[in-house]
Amino acid sequence: MFRIPDQPQDIFVPLTQDYLGVFGHQLISLTLYGSAAAGAYVKGQSDINVLVVLTDDGMNRLDGALGLVKKWRKRNVAVPLVMTKEFIFSSLDAYPIEFLNMKSNSMVIYGEHILEQLTFKPEDLRLQIERELKSKVLLLREGYLGSEGASRELRNLIGRSLTAVLSIFNALIYLKTGSTPRDKRATINEMSSAFGICADVFFNCLKIKEKTDKWSKSDVTVLFKNYLKETERVSHLVDNLTSK
Image 1 (cartoon, one colour):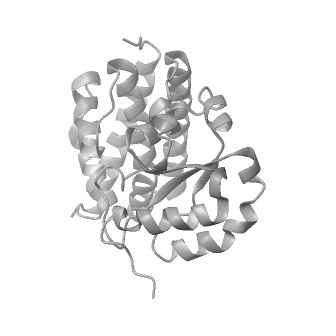
Image 2 (image 1 turned 90 degrees about the horizontal axis):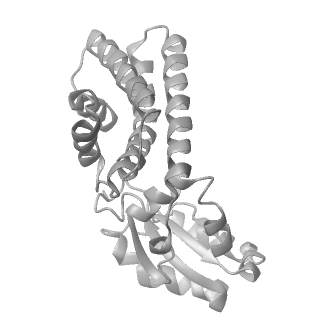
């Protein structure tokens, strides 16, 4: 019987034992990241995301972990990210937002706290922020046209895109202040304070994502247009952004 853990920490010991059983000294670290590490874990709903760092020799033994991954997926542990230290440190210029967000919400399960060692060049962050924001603006415009105005499609588009948009906002706040918010609501509040976005728009989008809203069809259409407008405005602001 595979039981969903009450808390992520409940699986740390057996998860570590299983990975050590497969990889031994080739396992450098296991790190919890994402919502479960940020204290936002909801039993039965949240995936447990784990970064597995291996040596080069360990990477040649991934076949041995196939059964292990299948076993732990039954307990809501997502398919892990598997990397080497060299891959991580050589990828910070290409994926600074992703690694920054992982670092901001992380907890060591076993071994080295590799994410804690990461530093980011402001120019790399700014470039990816600009690229990702403009990509999201294009996606939202395309999605709006493709929805043909159907509120269900607009709801789905808000729900699918909001997490990524707020992750970009986290990086933007870090670029300006040197720190990152702890959760989605803090991100919205800090973006409002630092960049003047309309916080209500994003809080209302969050209600749609969390399925706690009672908006009418016309309300959803107006909200989506404001969501797109605010995201476009932040995209324009990035061009003039300087880091602290």
